[in-house]
Length: 409
Image 1 (cartoon, helix red, strand yellow):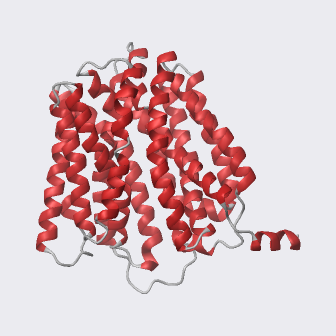
Image 2 (cartoon, rainbow, N blue to C red):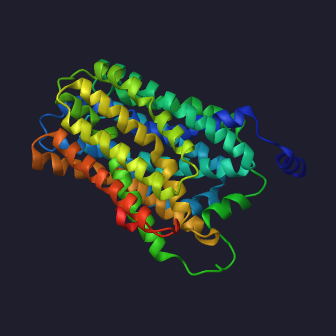
Image 3 (cartoon, one colour):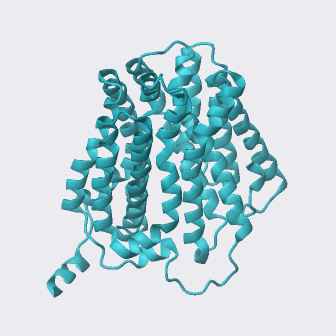
C-alpha cells in the first residue's frame, strides 16, 4: 500500500495522459455535433408523430438539461468517487446510453436515453476539467489545452462527415458513432491515474475552502448566468437545426449536407485564433466580436436564397462559434474573485448547458411564427447582432472591464 502511494506521488503525466484527456474531453461535444446532419432523417422516420418537428431537435439537446442540473453537483461527484473511477464509469455509461437509440424505435424512449447520456457527460466534463488542473502546471495546461483547441475542430468536422454517411445507411445509424466511447474507456483505464492530492480540484470547485473574504457577488453571477444563457442559445441554433435550414434551400441528402458543411466547420479554428489575437482587448469587446459573428452568420443563413449563401453564412457563424466558449469563460472570470470562482463557474456551466437545452424550443417557437426554419434563424441572428451592439455601447460608456454586462442579455 505504501509503495502504491509513493508510486502515485512521483508519477508524472506524459503523452498518453494528454492524448487520452483530449479524446475523452471530446466525447461531450460528440454528443451533439454528431446529430446535426441526422436531424432531418430522424424527423422523416417519425413523420407519423405530429410533434416530431420539435421533439427531435429537443432530443438532440436533451443532454444539456441533465448537464445543467448535475453540473451543480459536480464537486460532490468528484469528492466522493475520485477522478479516475468516476471517469471510467461515466465513459462506459456514455457508450451504453449513446448507442442505445440504435436499438430503439420510440421517440420518447430515445429522449429518455439522451437525458441519461447527459448524466454521463456531466461526470466526464467534471473529471476532465479537474484532471487537467491536477496533472499539469500552468505551462503544461496551456500546451495541452492549445492542442485540444486545434484538434477539436478536426475531430468535429470528421464526425460531421461520418454522421452523414452513417445516416445515409440507416435513419438511426448515426448513434453507432458513440461506440468510440469503448476504446476511449480502454485508453483511460491504461493511461489515467488518480492524482495524489485533490487540492487543485477542490479549489476549482470551491469545496472546503476557507471563509470567503468578500460577499458573494450575486449581481455579477446573475449577469454571468443571463449572458451565458443568451449566448449559449445562439451558439446551438445551427448545431441543432442547421440540417432543417439547408433543406429549405434544396439540400435533402445527409451525405451531401455533411460534405457541404465539412470545410465551413473548420472555421471554428479561425474563431479560436481571433480570440487569441484579441487577447489584450477587454473581455466585453471580445464578447461583442463573438456576438456579431455568430449573429451575423445566423442572419445570413436566415436570408440565404440558395445553399451557396447558406455556406457563406455558415463560415461566419462557425468563426463566431470558435470564439464562444473561451470568450464567455474569460469574460465570466473577470467578474469572480478567487474565493467565489468555483461556485460562480458552476453557475456558468449550468447556464451554458441549459442554453443548449432551451435553444431548440426557441427556434421551434420562431419557426411556427414565421412559417420557416430560416425565419427562426433570422430572428435569432438579429438578436445576436443586437446583443453585440449592446456590448459595444457598454464598452464605450464604461471604463471598468469588471462591471457586469447584464445589458447584453
